[in-house]
Length: 183
Image (tube, rainbow, N blue to C red; front, side, top):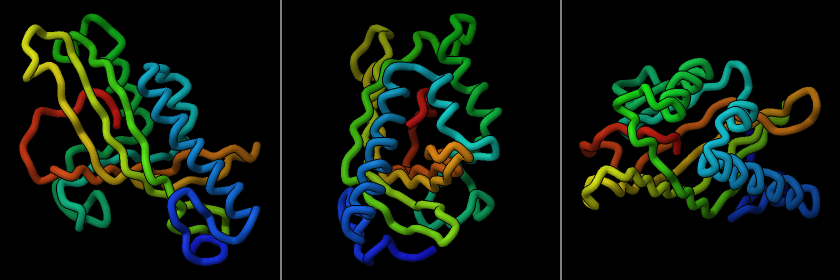
């Protein structure tokens, strides 16, 4: 991996003049669109953003470099992601009833690195508000937040795909009930 074009790489800036700004704008729009698809519960379109061999994981500690370095909250491939989200859309999944509604807030999207092969590493700060109508406010509303890192590649058609998504929750070491909706 190399630094973003032109070095630096501040908020939503890819450095390197117009080409870097275009890439930064494309990446920021892509990350925001992914969050919107989750809020809209358009899981079919969300899956289409992922490469076939993509990984989605949440470490227990920000020091973990790989999913095999220690315990993790989850480490999903595309197939497991599909199974998890299917539970959110079917009334027969007791543990997921009522299905949560979410609102994702994305901030500070930036390009951290661009490889010679075109792979892009981008990060953002994200907050997800999750609400479930279960009858008591304290248990109905939960907030998850942290740093989200996307490793992006290009499809043969040229559009961006997610090769890996890593979520470093600010309270990753804490105890909480499992997230039902993807962050």
